Length: 160
Length: 131
Image 1: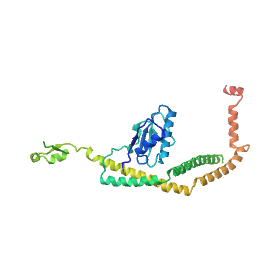
Image 2 (image 1 turned 90 degrees about the vertical axis):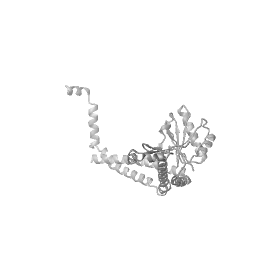
Image 3 (image 1 turned 45 degrees about the vertical axis):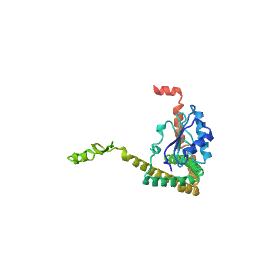
Image 4 (image 1 turned 60 degrees about the vertical axis):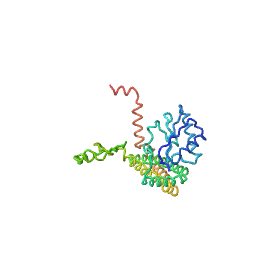
């Protein structure tokens, strides 16, 4: 098994079938991935990032679990699914490692890592992700309502 | 030609070995030089091992979150009950608050009256009071 370090996907063609091939070759879902977006306008960059998400969907791989996918673009500020960074230097240093031949201890640790990552991949991540998002929305509502109730309580106290 | 094997020895170790230089010369293939040990020799392994350990911890936390915590949350959702409880509490508070605010001599009405009078005072009165 390869070390789950950063793999770069180099492309100028952001059509979904090409991205599917490249992502599969780079080991999407088995290592962290980053892609440079070539777009020079925000809308175009958004379309390219959406194409990357569609490619992940076609591969049946979650774009952030267990290994994240980053898109590098100085124009795109935010994407609801993918992680966006402006420069390559801003990528997390955790996945930036020099690969070399592994020793026995490292190999056994890597096997353990593979086991856990496979366990995560086998979960129904999209459904669980949806459950987390729904819960997040409910919590936001609860937060707003609790603040309002607290304000009313304070008001009632001050009037008394 | 025999390639020389250069060994680096730290300064304090070199002091201990002083006087044995002639003996070292007998070993033609090795040369001992003073200086720190090459820092790149051992660090790589440690870095990679550290990375794998951190990665293992990260994945285990993700696994714990998605396979146990989220599933428990799905089985026993609490947010809806908490929301209903807060809504009920809010309604009760409003029921207590509104009559108090609506009464003619309420603190709210008095404060509003004071603000209104301050803001919309006739111009003549203000100039007189200023003088």
